[in-house]
Length: 195
Image (tube, rainbow, N blue to C red; front, side, top):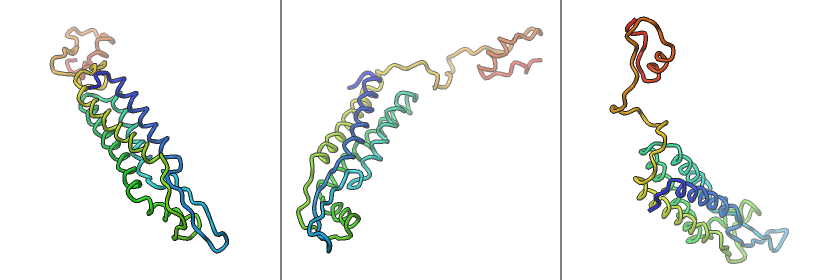
């Protein structure tokens, strides 16, 4: 369990940034032959091979930031969304690792206008690192959700006032008091109702 909100948020921010970072380099390499050149190198970055990874990385970052600002229920929702985004990061890498041919052919068609590859598709280390980052996001969010009850409540500025809280009411004497009127408005009562 992660019992500290700051540790969970920092871990998710780092992992979200890592998911962005591992989606940028070249994931696949291959070659094609064209009418003008017998060998054209084709390199496929992760953002092309699996565009869902960078989108899910953004959701991980947004979930981490929401967990810092939100109330108790919204914090839980933000962590679940971040965990699902981490699973999506991992799934995006798995899809490419299982079938590297399809994104390579698509990139070859875009780059050279040819869909017949002349060499086998070489998979770099980046999809594997992306898989590890996605799994790490899921693990961190599960541990954060398990430790959510022990997180500090915060200052309550985003929470609704409870029934047990005593709010200032309107003054009963006839002389208006600006400070008391303002406090009554802040508490949700109309100070001019009795006048």
